[in-house]
Figure 1 (cartoon, rainbow, N blue to C red):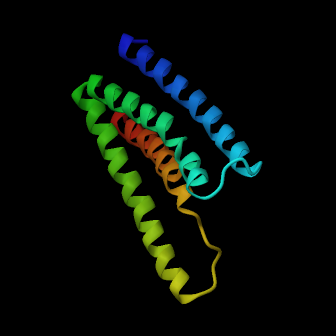
Figure 2: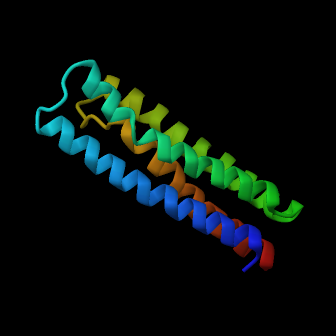
Length: 129
């Protein structure tokens, strides 16, 4: 494992641990009634801080990749945002036409990350054929 990958894993892992702890803490504080109104709203946004740190780690890793890996990563991210974006767009049209369950925007980022991972795997597989 390269130094850049080791650094990425370290920082991303720390960010995800912090994210989980802050998320649980904010949920507990809000549900226990310790916070309300704007303070609850602000507390609900606190998990974004470690998530942004994870994004920073991802961007730093991206910059350390060679041109081929950057191309695969960029293309995977384009496909992921396009697929999730068009799925959301289509679902929005569907909501206007028929009765469907409401889907929270909370699921957009995990969907992009999941589709990104799948597409990146496919792109690397295709490049190796």
